[in-house]
Image (cartoon, rainbow, N blue to C red; front, side, top):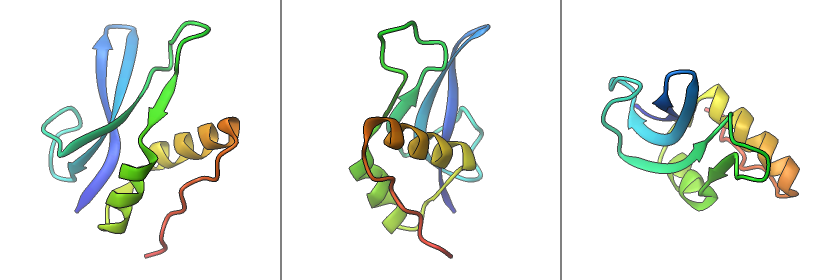
Length: 92
């Protein structure tokens, strides 16, 4: 199954996460299909914290990819902040 999840990067005590589309059997930081965004929880004030290509997210969800709970929470949270409608998940 294809999943949309966070892959950790960055240095020790300085996390940086890429939002990736990957096969479920691959390791967390292993090979992925496509990078569709990023999340930087330690970004300084004034810098972008979260970016997500919403068209690619909708495309992969239409192909059956399941977002992780963290990715769906972040997408919903930042869509609300930016005043956009959240991308709906299809019930399985």
